[in-house]
Image 1 (cartoon, rainbow, N blue to C red):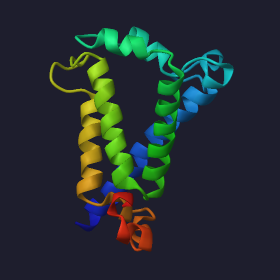
Image 2: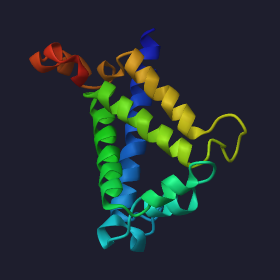
Image 3: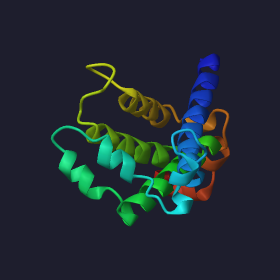
Image 4: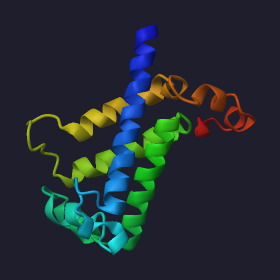
Length: 162
């Protein structure tokens, strides 16, 4: 299992970087998914494009009505930032993974429960499964600060912070 611990740690770090990159790209418009003139810093909603144009299926109207909402933008961006930092550092991994599962599931619902490239599964569902691994196998202790964090009085008293 020694090799598996490193793989789990690298997987956690990689997922953290995915969330941090999404945050940075949407905030600064780094030119990958978000053009510089579409960044949050210039006043463009980081959720509007996805919620207006990528939503399909029975919940389309619900998600399109959320597009451009300041509250949704802030929740989304803070979620990306928190999940990314927590996974990269290895603390709050269970909380970050749970929030990531919720965020990814909502995104999966928004695309209409019908993956574009495969009739059964897509990247949102794969990421959700990976996040469950982080929770079940205490992934923060591998290549992260989770072991030290888990020994703090706060975490010992309130395991939700693990």
